[in-house]
Figure (cartoon, rainbow, N blue to C red):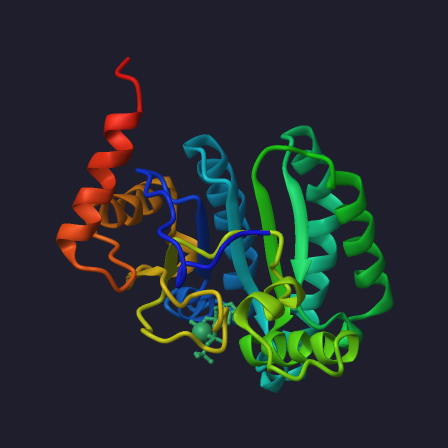
Length: 259
Ligand code: IPE
Ligand code: IPE
Ligand code: MG
């Protein structure tokens, strides 16, 4: 279990421990090339591969990618089917490679609406990679931040129905879909939009936000490096004053033996 950023100061490092990305702009990437939207999604998958590799190399521990939101069902039927098919193909093709690279795969979201063969591939992929100790790659599929909070509340209340003094954040935390991961340090959204679109509402409470106009299929290791560089320039205060944060950092540094 990880402590919440709203209660303790997480260790600040040069490389974010957990990166969460809204991969947006596939449709516009395709449209600008007079291609069908789905061609953008196909290219988007290549950007996913490159980003997974770059994060693993940089020493990121958790990478969480928003692949399909609970609202994306509102898109044209053909586009939804294509995205589901692309997910199936990606799992069929990539799980072995993820495993070879010691990557642990996780999928979060409401699986009840996904096709059975997709659910089967997800379960197999998670099982095969569950003991890997490298990067944890989480794909958010049919995920919504509100869904997550509600499903967690429902499970918590079902298991502890008579808690008279009320529930705490710590009571809820184990039931959230990403209870296995610390909260995101860095949130990236490509495609120019500056909104959360019902992604990790609870978990992003203290993430640093990075927005770029670059469209997701164009996102590469240089784009990631720019986001990391912006992240390094931030002072994360978690409600405290700048002086408190500097003092806490000095104390940590004085305890770390010089090498
Ligand atoms: C993001 O790209 C991919 C998904 C939501 C699945 P979009 O498809 O939203 O691309 P734009 O925003 O229309 O350009
Ligand atoms: C958010 O992108 C969801 C994913 C990237 C999967 P959208 O393109 O669906 O977001 P909105 O609807 O424009 O906010
Ligand atoms: Mg979009």
